[in-house]
Image 1 (cartoon, helix red, strand yellow):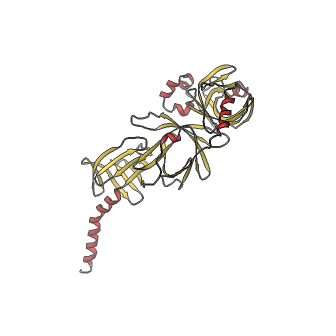
Image 2 (cartoon, helix red, strand yellow):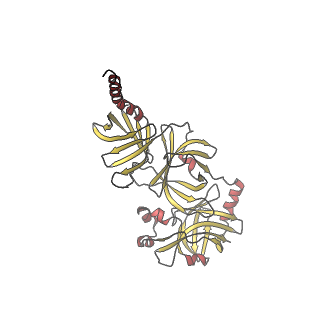
Image 3 (tube, rainbow, N blue to C red):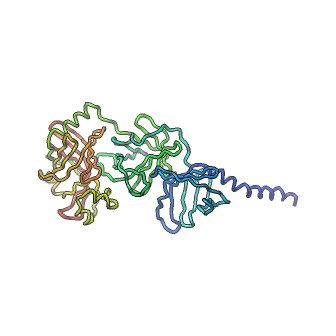
Length: 384
């Protein structure tokens, strides 16, 4: 009996200390990396939400928001109460993960967000250039805009364009934001416009960021670097040559096999107004990188380009203006088209002289006039 007393005392002490241990582990900054309904695979918008637990206060902020909510909380055993109401139940807690259950219907996994001594970063540093995300040899090109996504009232995400880096680039419209939470800088990029890829900035150097993916299933580190700018003399030469003449297709040097066959809805085919397109869900993704002409018209070399000195452009079809908007030559020599059929379109200059222009791009082409079916064709063309 005497030998059992110390063990009983130790067991009681451990039970009494568990809430204290949980409280000590809880009091740090966490970020939600994956959330699922208990009964379905529904992806919750709570992903990317930061929970910063103090001694008795909880700061809540999403990576796509520039505002934070502050609540008082109390930890009772394994239950977190906010304003005397049940908020979440701790199903697991350790130094490297936290599992919370909300209202018995959603489970969310959180990882700790450790402080990193990284220099302050301004989101404007990402604008106007092409950036490459390099992880384990796979590279993606990203171009960032300051145009708001406008999904939710307090959503601060912006529109960006992601492309596979290589000879041919087929773009897709995504969303991004750069968040600073207590000197923890987070770069968030969407995948398919919904899933969030969240990276913490570990260090910066000249035009290069070293990023640490928040989700453990991703690789350890990612390089994010700005594509080299053209020398000023070359940049001026490119600009002068682009505006020097009306460029007409003379030869199709290369084209890839069809990469995707899709179906455009009738409402999209009938609409030519970008203001209307911007109001329909997912329209940017559906219309990005498209000339909305047929394959036959393209292969018969009916397409021509006019880049004007006032930074307006027009794409003509058989000498009739078809798609007009604004253009910009990025620092790396990429042509950016905007305000036309595509919200953002990026064209690679392979070669340019006073008399010859070689461009590479990927576009959607209707299989035949008035058809809802389309192909995606990556190509290189020569214009003179």
